[in-house]
Length: 258
Image 1 (cartoon, rainbow, N blue to C red):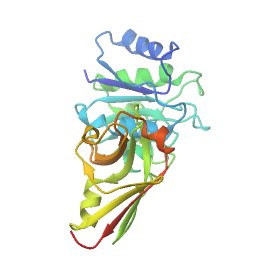
Image 2: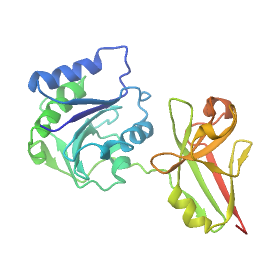
Image 3: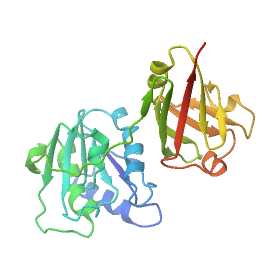
């Protein structure tokens, strides 16, 4: 049986996470359930995309990812099962699927809903579908194949010969600012040139290996394990101290010479 992961905006004070797990375990007591996060901000689709998108490919192919974020975000009441890069996803038609897959999932079906709208879709609709897929069920049994799902666009970089403009796409638990500027992008544009990174009123001219390579309280730029440019303050909260958050602009400027 495949692993089932859970990602939600349920938090940790209510019974909602336990109720979804109870439904899964009542149908398959041996189910392997892994919590990715239940601390996604309520209805925050971009945050859910970053959290799940950063880790889903680390799981074995065939893993089923149940995503209970903004589960009532579709006024049509549609829910989808999708296959992408060998993984399965169960989620509401709220745009998250398009962000996770850049609008190109391998297969999408609209889940059958016998009773129309439900007050707890993660438990009543998505959990049984997750068990079915984890036990090797055919995704096309769950509903009708479709290409009609809500489309959202990921933030795009602005590039030219002398600069890159990106944005903060996630603020982690430590207040570090994760951007959509990648190591590959910087290396491609730089061609060995010097550059400076500009954010808030700060300018940084070097990318370090980790945050501890600067003094406590100093700004530091690194590439995280996904190759994304990240801005932090050693032993501090960069988001709070710099006044930056999701969608804040980050600029890199390149100069002649090496």
